[in-house]
Image (tube, rainbow, N blue to C red; front, top):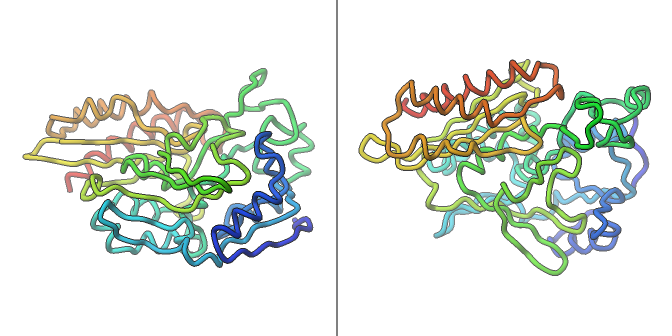
Length: 333
């Protein structure tokens, strides 16, 4: 599957990159972002372009913007550039010691070769996935296309008007647990938002990022440093594969009891989501197997997997229950 022709743009600064986006992105108000695509590691974009899911006129290569790389400690926490590779995050002693759930989530993305190329910004902006979408053009054409690309039919929920493609990034649930903030830079302003506000919950228009905006940095607050963190992931193969269900857990303890806790899911909804009510169940109590089972039940109710992957929704929901319990109990070790 060959790539369509495009013009490659290579900015050296954030301002230059945003300028290119403003010039070539089209009508931002209309959500028209098909003319230009941003490439960092390219581990997701290039395969999608080969499948003709994206056929942009311009590709914005941001890899040479030096200020977007690296992990920097600040008085208010830690700043991570959007171009920082997943392998750098995986091996960072600072993140392993202070924000272990993020380090572990990054370590489980695909394979070492992919992690050497893939960036945290790319993992946050990862396109949603579905069996009916991530296919070749010939395959999709034979099926009449789908709501997410070129059609008006959802093969997952026939008769529905919503797209249920699943978000499958590994690091965003960890960022949710850490109460991180994402910096977005546009032509006229710079803003910080929570990951929960970054995603729409729709499989097709899945993120609140205008075509003329660029994700530039991630901020981890000092208040979340030192939380025990665990990430568990379901996939068919031990490497390469995207998660088919994922659970991130971050817990802070005081005098043997849980002082704060967050549980977040990925790959079972069109967006990464916090498990509502998990904090209230956990805080103030010692962690027991029974309590971990109760939070697992709550996580299973939060998960809404559909037939978007090779495994059944029932199995993926049950594994959310199992992985939540295991992740919580693993924070004791």
